Image (cartoon, rainbow, N blue to C red):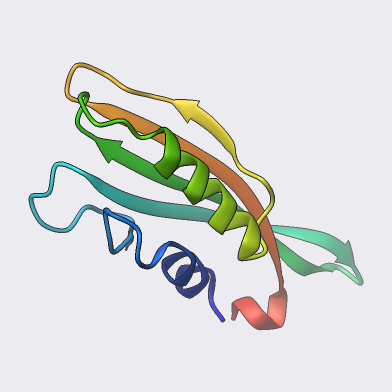
Length: 113
């Protein structure tokens, strides 16, 4: 299963839902988007054996919303889906809450192609 599929499946059913890859869809004030970078790793015989995926999941919500339980649930679901336990960075500004969940995963080169 692709990383996109694993993230969307893991976060399915949460409010806000669904999580979207790379960019916000629609006009909702509360939403989740995610992105990731793939870095070659585990080199041998002049090639990488794996890709390390550096994943970011972004939660956006209005200032007045209490997101504590939602943030805990996002972390729990990412771990249950096989990702490393995420670090959580607050990146809120005058427009609203923004939390960045950063975690990792790995795929063999064959799985990623």
